[in-house]
Length: 202
Image (cartoon, rainbow, N blue to C red; front, top):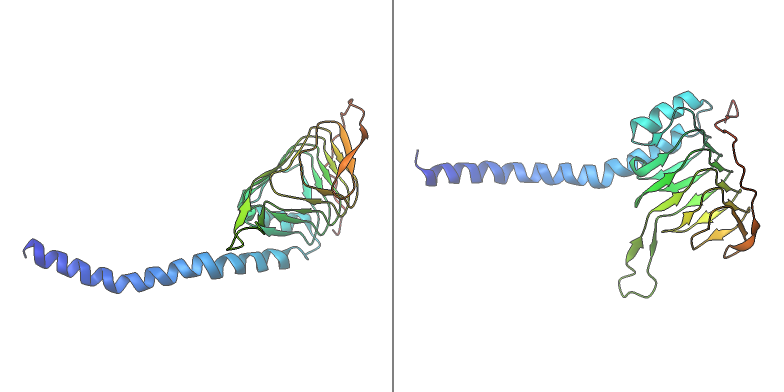
């Protein structure tokens, strides 16, 4: 068989396989991603840390064994969420890790916290999506119902008061609060505690 026939045969085979590849790409990029998020949301309602953490890690969440993630958490791109040692993350959290969320050690995140790494640029003609990673350093404490916006870094030992909306970096050992979050006072610097406790059925 000459090269022309060979190419022709390969071309015909490839042509028949290409629709299958397109279906596979569509499934992986569209259906599987959404199904996985639905599945993880359902897993979040199971009142067992071991059960949930097994499936969270299975889908890519990088979480230290000494840390706990309480129930009803929801995710975007769980494989880009990194949680350090001795952390406690409260119930009903939302972690939009599409551009990456890194949480240090001994971090306490209270209930119903929302962390975003992407948003829409309201001034672009096509309502473009923009984003940047979020980093929360060691010993930070994030109060309940806080919203953290893309690109923010929470400093070492910093505290964000409940209900705050954080749109810019928070310096180390600083307490901030309000909408948008603003400086309130400095925090004590001798921090030696360890977290990771877990409510038994949450």
